[in-house]
Image (tube, one colour):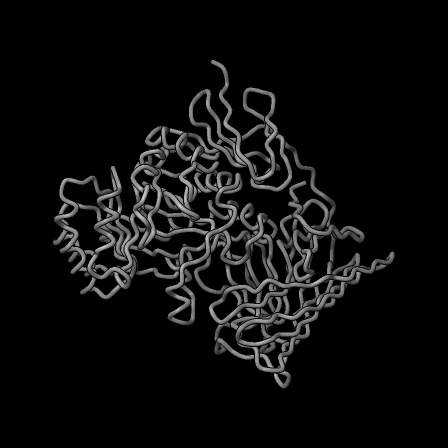
Length: 558
């Protein structure tokens, strides 16, 4: 059955199966027969810039024949204040509930403390839903098919819907008004129902006189029998041209060893990101340009139009004679695109966002005169587990379909895609906006290569001209800090040899975390984006065993 287990403590009572995080704060992969109904239900604590605090706690689990009770409590000791929190989970054959109690003696600043409910996309997409609102009204609606740029459901106190497998669910929320957003915008495989509403002021403070107390109740009104599902050889999702593959160079990057790293990777281009706030006279950019060989794209962060045009004037002679595949002016309007064309005649000028598809999807009035639009992706914006990275390949097809529908006829250059966010576009302070994210410690592990292949298979399409990944070198790089290739670097170089050639995107029935490419009549590359090993059937017969979060390259004899 297509239910995705996850690491953690497995809990089962009746038909209900779920996995509890080690800290007791999140119940994940909540499944009924034949279907994962929720990616998770959990308790989150955000800081003033929407960053997530880790919970340090030791859950106590009690189980009888009728129910499972989990009690967990902890304290967050942050520079801005203390937060004492506690949870009680109750699981039974006919549903589950969770309640939280949070206080702070000195006032704890936050943008969100409370519960989130992650409705699994395959279970909920397009399904009819009845929503009870805080004004007493009841609304008949549907979970979005194309990705909703804004919250599809507001003022939620209860939900009633039947999943695609036939399980009827009822959710009730207490202690705060909830609303729902489409997390596919951030490559999360869920619709998220959360509190508190974004219409309320934030950051806000939790105190002993204004504590946070919430409760979520989930009832199973009907449990359907498990569907019969066949596993089989891969199916061809589509055939397309392998896009041009690039690597990134971040603002202010060191040029030591940069030329050698890029030469070793043999990319189709290098995406050089420019931050005019930190490099207004392009001093560092000149050094990077002189160190980077081959084709380039310049990605210029949002700045005042005058500063961007002044930079264009400086760049014009520096780009003479170079192969330039694009000048990305993030957040540019039609006037800025037109002015850039005057200063850099003959070069492709793009618009869009240096942040996530969320921002592209919410900005419907992107200039039609742009030669291309752009966005980037990270799988760890809302969570940092390996399983979160694995699930992020699921929504890519919906993102691509939404982009093609919303911007018909438009070309796209997307990336750099990175494990960790390059910056936080939703920070609430200037320091938060300018602070670069820490490098993901898994950059040198096989999971980075598996995710890169899953991203390529999920996004590759004839409207995608380029895709770029990671940085060329360093802690966020394909080449590590010592100049040695990571598993992702080795895979990138092999894939780059197929740029411009026709390839096929493969998927495996019943195995949604397998993703692959048929690169030629004899060459396959397959990624397993799950922590458990998998057996992938081959079109010619036989199978391949792929370790968790790993890739295999299969050369079939002629």
